[in-house]
Image 1 (cartoon, helix red, strand yellow):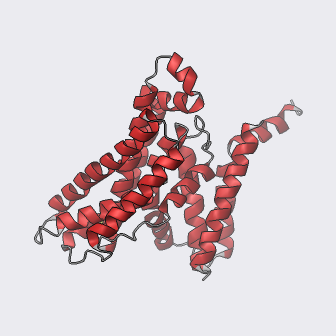
Image 2: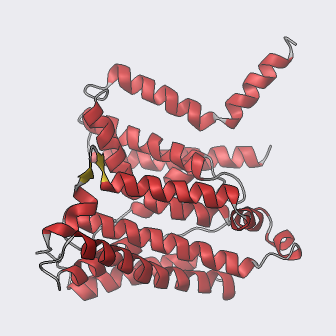
Image 3: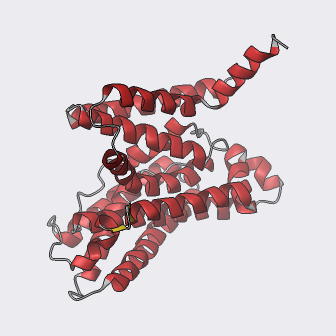
Length: 321
């Protein structure tokens, strides 16, 4: 019995590395970071990770299928521009119309961009890195062309409801984040479609032999990722009360970092939304703590790079066991 206990503890630690790290990080911040342990600051952390969570959720679907999407930041910016341009046509728009515009532009812009990515990856067999890199440049370029590199201002106050307002004590953007994450957890963990994504990510050839329509699965995950990236961009435009081509720059790295740091394998087939949630909170708490300590945002960027590198190294070590 005594000999088995260490093995059980080691197994638990190995399977829950990120959870343990998150708990330790939280404890250290409580002890050493001024003003960290306040309700207002915890609310700020949730607000800060809300937009990244939307993008990271879509990225989780793509990475689980053994893909990657570098275009999410550019798609987010393009969707934010589209939403701002549309709502500006209705200066007296209410909250309902603003919500419809946000949802419609998310589905249309994200759906189109995601479909193009999916087409190149699943049908034309273009490597995901190359296909989405091309979309990243094309979407960002379209944003600059449409706006002439100038932000779209003068939006109705109702447009800011999603990005700036709260329902009771909870920000609307945080509610939206929980709804999206909850839906993703259900899809990946409780549906045949979710199991098909894991199967495709684990071994494409075996998935084909099992009767899974691999092309449709790959196409669908890029569409989901595109729509969620566009939704994040529309929420960001709502928060900033403008649409601009420079928005969401580098957000693709934040999303990849959250997914990889959480423990989802960059080779696909292993991990999921729970792991992504851990990664989101680790990154959110690190950035928040650095800000409270008065450390430059440049160091936050360096920390993000280190996080991605550590996550990939851990993934490689676990894959080789």
